[in-house]
Image: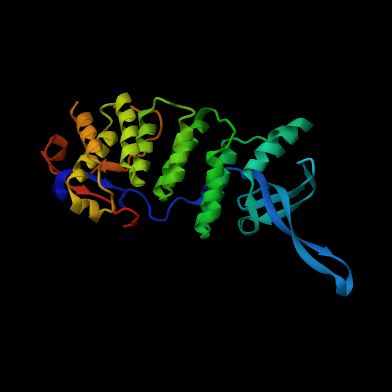
Length: 315
């Protein structure tokens, strides 16, 4: 099988910027509001016998400006107390670690239990808070701190808060971003959470299939392509990825060139069946798209050109 088989390509620089999404942009459009842990210097003793050590404290942090935050200590009853300390984004990113689970499990119930209108507003985890925390995760990546970013994204995938309206699509939309950043396991976790809100959308099933494809899991990718195809047999992106499976099955040279594992024969056979045998409500992760080709070629059933991104490559 030759490279000129399909008019498809995967995530070239023409499709998306190489710089990645801006964490500051998401934070500007969102609202960081969460519990953070921080090491606080504590001085003990007097005079020459004094010494300082660091104590782990939990603080309630709320965004007050584009890069400004108010930080307050939490009491033993899990409620903010005392005067707020004003900190910058750099200080937040360097010295504070988000504790989303602690916020949901302890602080939110304590605030709701106190019952003031301010507490009801402050304890709300909505789409703006989700955007702000996702942006903070991107900031961690920009600062070269992937471990902290991964921990925060994992917490967001497990968040217990429920969302309504357009906010329901955040897991799908942010899953696409994570997949483009090469964080395939996290992207899959976000897409699976999206299934909590919609179970019959062909685009979401395609997005799951695409993330598993990037993660070198042919079988799970096919499973979700089957689901996508069931709801929309004519969806172009789904059929494009099925054709990729068929094209790579018998071409060891292409598999090696693009860093993909062998396609199991049963997977390729099922892909052929689906191809032989359109409409989404969620945003489609459709960077596997047709390129302009000569009239009479791929679009009319002939051949075009296939161009793949090497696995793990940025060019």
